[in-house]
Image (cartoon, rainbow, N blue to C red; front, side, top):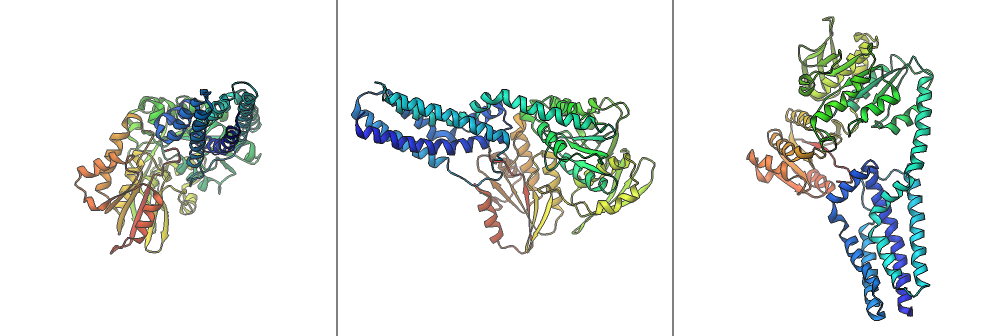
Length: 525
């Protein structure tokens, strides 16, 4: 190989190493956000083909490695070098809402990726020792072009190892649970509201008895296994286990691990409709919790939820909500700047008044569910009142943050139609300049356009200003807003959330600004 081609090979090698390093971290991050699922990640790549435009160019230029004429090969190699550098720049570090978590699984996949890349580079070096030296450029180019798929390949290679590791930890957690036969596990699931009900119930119960709770959104098999192995102690009497699902069978899998004695179903709705495929599948999956409970187990359901009313569980259940026919019935709500006061009627017709720092009708429903479940464990309603006062908003779920002349209602973790309507209804009752900031809702399958349009239509009745994040993503919301003849000069579109907030803080208004942050799309959207 002529000297300048050797120099180009060296330069491309260095650029390729940096490029695949950055690409590996970015694509591993997306793979993690997509739940390490092959079909989900491939679907994400298909939806975001535009993000990989530079990789297409690198792929096309790498095919020039079949050229053997040195001058032309040199020109093509130079173009390939520029493209590989561009690829490295494109995959540079960018601000992340939720950074890549370097779990043991991720570390193993990165190690496997490194081994595979070393083997590919050795193949390129080998080509230099043969009479097909030009193929070394082809190998390097293809390594960069196909780097978005390396995490999938590494995951496939590691699959037998991951199965063994997960099985060990899973069996260990099951053994720990079997050693505590008196532990009462209550499974908590629903399309939305499960994290809030879990933490509200924990705030009430932990003062009454030793209670273990799955932290944050640890609602997957391995999240629950980690909770059990790290935190379960012999003193625990109750285990509050949040159960998340995106696919049919997910709740059954979790029930097979913890064998819940009791259950709470907070709501049935359209969330994750894209992966479930139909509303019927959502109902079937959530009711896998009901099916798993023993005959003497208690099942609590939110009877304000229309879908639950129309499709009740097949076993006996206890209802809670704000309708008079509920077993635990909240009524006479009074909302102020300091929170909410309401009265609760128990099944024995006794009534108690509760007050909470939280705002929103849906929070009253969630607290009622938590009170009902705590009462089932034997805690007196009169004893609960002081603990209900201590309930704080779950971070990013209708969390109030006061910043001088601006009040932020942080509902960024909400991404379902019913929750969005509830948050907007709360905003409508607030005194001030009411501003909605949202990128819209996702993972709603074929209903996504319709539900986002309805969201925009409802927002037009509740807000003074509407700020949309991402022009393309929020088109359905804009359609709904426009149909309501909402003032065009009060609809503002930004591509970046930070840019929007900077503008809103600087905006001059004659009243205090109340900004509702409704949903915050993860980095893979």
